[in-house]
Amino acid sequence: MPAAKKKNLIVLLVLIVLIAGAALTYVIFSQKPVEGMKTITVDVIHKDGTKKTFRIKTTEEFLRGALEQEDLIKGTDSQFGMFVETVDGENVDAGSQEWWCFTQNGESLMTGVDVTPIKDGDHYEITFTVGW
Amino acid sequence: MKSPLRSDGKDGKSIRVPARKLTVLALMGALMYACQVVMSFVPNVHIVAMLIIVTGLLFGWEAFYSVILFIILEGITYGFGIWWFNYLYVWPVLVLIVCLLRKNDSVIFWAVVAAVHGLCFGALCAIPYFFIGGAGMAFSYWVAGIPFDIVHCISNFVVTLVLLKPLRTVIERYALQKAE
Image 1: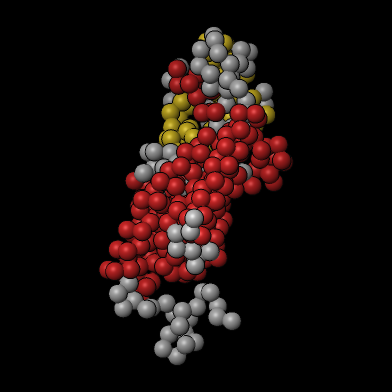
Image 2 (image 1 turned 90 degrees about the horizontal axis):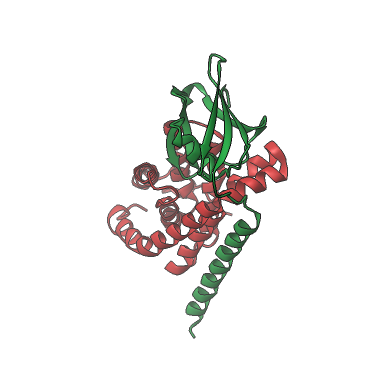
């Protein structure tokens, strides 16, 4: 086999191994979604400090689906997942460093709404925040 | 040793980039930006990596100019969040790799380089979270994004495999005539 073809074959094999490794890492370490009906609580803290609590009954597996089911969030899809711009009808102005902070029981979420699995009894807070 | 960012003028010592080459570099940066914006409705599918590879292969270290322009335009458009600081090193890393391995001529090789960059995109973007919330936060961030990274990897591979050679030919033939 010519040297160039051999080199191409090796790099392709390396790529396949890396993809397989990444997929395996995801399968082993990712948070697994839960099927079935579940009830979660979502507190929305608006810019003026007012707080509204929503109790959501859903079969959705991820936070985004549950929030969209209640028409609570709107945003823009990006390569990082959904960037939430509107919550409970209130928009943020990114130019003024305004954004919606998602927390669970007061602790920052480590994942976006698209990939945060929910389970029965979960409690989330969505807080209007200014400043990066 | 010749500086990687210098471009020889008539006296061999000038650091000015010839006007035509500068124009092409600027256009490549603008093209990276335009293509990203146009394809932004499809997450993780774009031709930016391929464009960076082409620019790096044709211009070497001067491709940094195009990438810097791209990063600035992205920041102006989408705001200067954490993701923008990711961009400050994620894309220049690809330029660095291209310049170091520039002698390779194989399209498959460069398609794999683009694919690996796409696969590592999430890991590279997780670096700031290591400093914000520790190894656990960075690892969670990276793992959650792996499906997006795999899509990014495959799309980069296909796009580069199909478009690298034709685009390079077009630029060499029509944009770089008498540019040097």
